[in-house]
Picture 1 (cartoon, rainbow, N blue to C red):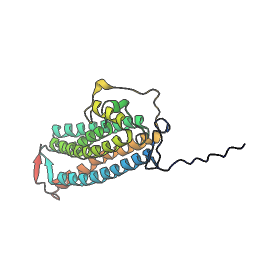
Picture 2 (picture 1 turned 90 degrees about the horizontal axis):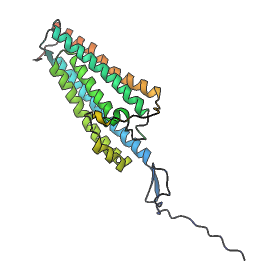
Picture 3 (picture 1 turned 120 degrees about the vertical axis):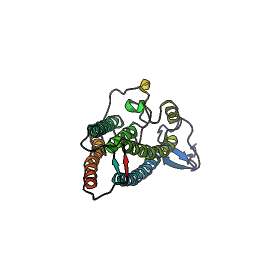
Picture 4 (picture 1 turned 90 degrees about the vertical axis):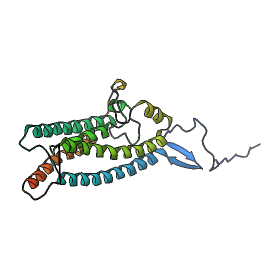
Length: 243
């Protein structure tokens, strides 16, 4: 006797049982398969667009401040030279530090939760080095106050961006990111938490692109010198003198 075949069609509203779906980047919601990696990537892409737009606006505001303010120290004084040299060192630390971070992310930051190397010390080391670079860029004015303002504005912008990124990461990585969030500081390095990765797989194009982006901080030096020359020639009249 031939038994009739049982043509079973899964319901479109059925969700997979725990353990059936081994792809951690795929979830079933209301019968639709949703790629969590794509949602994560889109969320971070939107945040980065906001970051770039806000930093451009902040950069223009800082340029206006530099044009209307002048360092109290004359360009020929030693203290002016020391402040500028300190700024150059800060910019170099920024460039090398950003490259160090790129070695560990290797283009994986959009798909994986990186928690080793500099990311074991603080959750946003790339932004931390950018803040150091902003301080160095402001120091090319010869004023410590302007350098501090550059760093503070950069920190304010990146902190808001970080809060948006954290919301995306919570949705993408769930409890794993929550544990990382409560154990590793946002910006303040915690050296005793160092964890390395072996072997370390890096992507040279990502590393070189990150180094190239950091080199934009070096352009601030010639811009600052041009503003100083215009102020000395009387083409721009500073309204305030800052130490």
